[in-house]
Length: 277
Image (cartoon, rainbow, N blue to C red; front, top):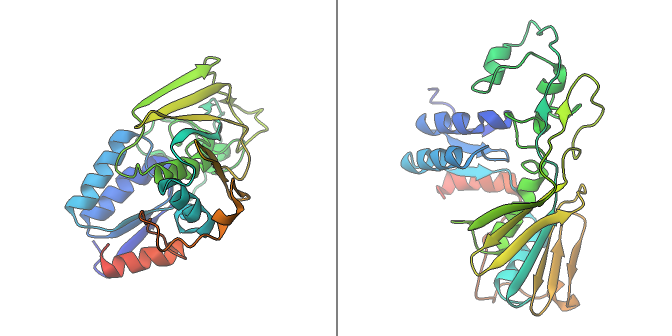
């Protein structure tokens, strides 16, 4: 309700993103929200509806959209340099853990019920409250979808961008491999981020009969491999590999399909607030 606040940054645990963003929009505040934007499709639709109805600016922490190599890679794919896309291969990040952590004394400075919010009640444990621990809420079901919703959100965003799917998405999703058996967090857990169940491989199909397979070993750089009839492009935070070396220096300004980008993701949020776009 404060009139001296124009915009907010929401970096709360993922299960709070939707409610915090909707409340901010209803209060007339612009929103920067960290990925993953929401935990469910329904939450995402409700958030977008609130932002649009209240004419607010929303930016998600998908910083790769403001990085030159990712922008160039997606521009090359969108403008047909690898030809018709025949397959995309992404990283098989770990899914969410189940939680069986024992209860610990709640710190006097923490309202644990408020922190949990709308999720199924769980006893306090420092390995839940801490985002990256053993394993941390980023890996625990109800609070997050696991690393597939953490680093994986960046990778899937690049696929969406490169395939021109910002207003849509895959038409089919299925899994192959062993039945999904989530890891269980308990008092003996010694692993954290990037660890968890990976035996089940996620497949998606995009319009144009383009398959996406999340099958590569997880690594800190994430990324995706775009395979086309005329070439390939691999992009992550450590690599930018192309079939034709000249693609890395090709002038982009004259290409027919132009993708908006910015030099600084956070500055872009401020500029968007000022320019109302």
